[in-house]
Length: 334
Image 1 (cartoon, helix red, strand yellow):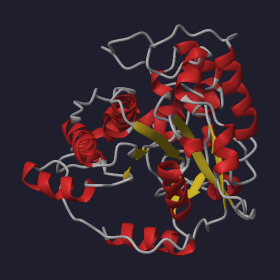
Image 2: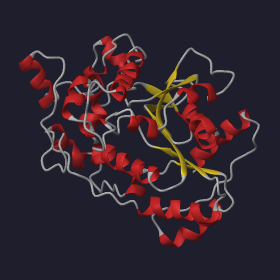
Image 3: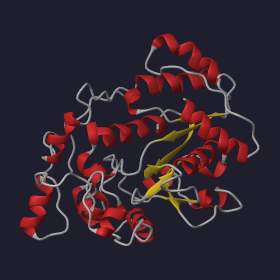
Image 4: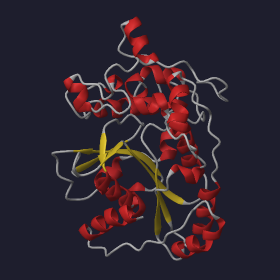
């Protein structure tokens, strides 16, 4: 809460819109339901930036170690999502917020990529064969993809923001936020820029009904007109479905020749030129390895550590890319 207040206060100060009031509540606890309703009463908009515990992802005492070995073998367990906290929040907003209430939802870039048709995954392997997608810790990408769809179908005004890798000011300073669609963006996003974009998503009419990714492009100043001109160029989710884009939900048959997939390819052409570092190939990353280390040929782990299955496969095939074996017992075709 303190970190959120610090970041959002800075954003609101820049916008000359006052300060932020923090109401502490556990979204997963019924005892805090009244505090949540009180915070939403008469609200024009809200930002959903809750952690994944609120969606049912509870790592347990072993934390990241609980999924490391299965994930490296390409066997990430299917998570048991729980959207009760989210739907309770949305119900409360419907009841006590203003009629034109808008929800800006924070999720993550890459959430749709494991849901794409297998042919699309192969076509876009430059954004599929990256660490967060290969590991998909605790099934977080799948759960967030499903949570987005809960919001889209709940009958409220919304905008969904999917930032790439989050960074603080000292490692990736705030600069120009860049918006994209198609879930093909890879790179870095400054946390303060993410806050700026979330406020825009909650308030700008140009953002309504749209899902989009964002990254921070260092060295470029923000647009002095704000984010409205960029947001106005984005497609609504309904338009993207009508164009035949595979959104990772199984709602349409994958057609590489559709207008929707041409739209994705156009976004990819631009996004592929925006990676940090000189090595413009995110598939060469491993979890925890930075773009700068990749440029220098460094590996961020202790010397003598056993090679991963991925590294052994790369060495055996000579290919720069390798797909983990498909996850068994999936409920739809990949």
